[in-house]
Image (cartoon, rainbow, N blue to C red; front, side, top):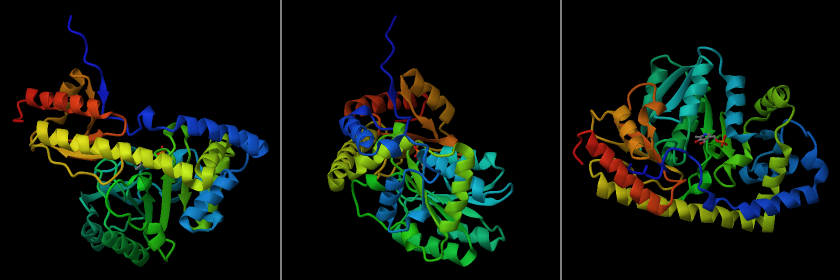
Length: 370
Ligand SMILES: Cc1ncc(COP(=O)(O)O)c(C=O)c1O
């Protein structure tokens, strides 16, 4: 019997172990218990571990009262939706968008309105057209940097236009930004949070992509009153988030005046850059009909094959060859059959080369010219 091909997963938006600073984390854990045994082991309160909250506030140039630290940013998203989104409220999302955001909004009964996503971000004219049609969004969920699933980045001009639109119409922008620190080419852009003068932006980020996902530490930054409301929801949900994890992150990011954290993030970015380049080159070579945009950072690449490609059949053919991808349809309310998402964060360069060769073979097996 022929042996099964070794599995290669482009599916999970997670880092491979070689880009997690395990030794740095062990040392940070040791310091957390050493330096603050009481704060690290106590319940604490729902706003999170105070020294980490202070560090995050400093990074964003806001008051600590504008920050709540949660168990991963997924938890922050859930609290925000619970606070702001009622059954039937209109919420703008990017098309395509993060599958978990879609699930979470739909389970709250939101009227989800996907607006086209271009290489430079959401189609602002599309949002304006909705408003002109009398559909007033309560919230706009936007992933500005190295978007999940597309890998695209919202331009500076569009950031300014969206902040102005939100202020004019009283729309809350939910800036969901876990990949911001993973830029490996091009120039960083200002957050919409920093451009906002009207308290219309709520910002979420996470240490999942810069420290490790298993630590489950994320956060929200927003207007003080809203953060206080969310802190009440959090108290009623879990009293307080995981203080041990937050205390470890606090030690990790503060070590060596921030230098150790910077070096650790630099190592992650170098690996991602190399993997993204290998993936783009392999796709260009093996699947010349695939359309994609080379990312400037982050974890993901969105691949479109010619119209008429059967995404379900491709998914199955790839799986038969030991290759996991995520179907484009998972990120959309409709369409996306000819698209899929590739995460290059968890695969080495040799795995990328082998995985794309098998993927091309899967595409050819469907009868699509490669
Ligand atoms: C856009 C986006 N938001 C939120 C999350 C959740 O991150 P966390 O691990 O902090 O819960 C992810 C994770 O992949 C993501 O891609």
